[in-house]
Amino acid sequence: MSYKILIQLGLSSMIFLFSTFAALYEGSQILDDPWDWKYSALFSNFVNGQVENDKEIIWIDHFVYAAKFMPTFPILMLLSGTYLVFLVGYILFNRRNKVYFTFLTIIGVINLFLSWLLTSSSTEGLKMFQNSFLIIGILSIAISFLWILNKKDDIVIQ
Image 1 (cartoon, rainbow, N blue to C red):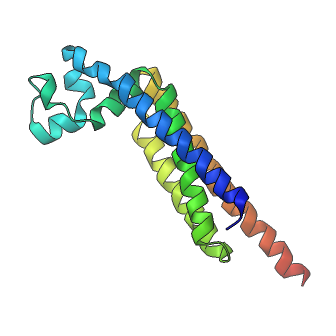
Image 2 (cartoon, one colour; image 1 turned 180 degrees about the vertical axis):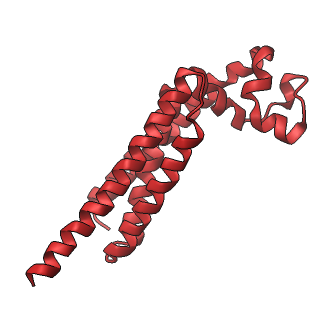
C-alpha cells in the first residue's frame, strides 16, 4: 500500500472522527427539546416506546437531531465516511477492477435508495442529506458506467 493511500486514509479518518464528535455534541441539544422527541428521537421511540424523559434517548438520535437542524458536521461525516468506504474498497479490490466498479455501483444504488427515503423531508438539513445521497449515488454509478464504456472501447480496438 502506498503512502498516498495511507495519508488519505489517515486524513479522512481524522475528519470522520472529528465530525462524529462534533455532530454528537450538536445533537445533544435534543435533550433540551422535549417537544421534538416524538419526531427526532426515532430510534429511542422504536427501542423504548414513547420517550418520557431525556435519559431514555439513545446516542444515535443525537445524530438524527443534528442532521435535521445542524447538518454541517453530519454531512461532513457522511462525505468523509463515504470516502473511507471508497478507499477501503479500492484497497480490497486493488487488482480486480470489475469487482471494484461493481462495488461502486452497489454503493451508488444504496445512496440513491437513501435519497429516495428522504424525499418527503420537512427540514432543510434532511433535504441537504437527500441531495448529498443523490449526488454520491449518481457519481458512484456514473464512474462505474464510464469505466465500463472505457473498457468496451479497449475491447473493440484490440
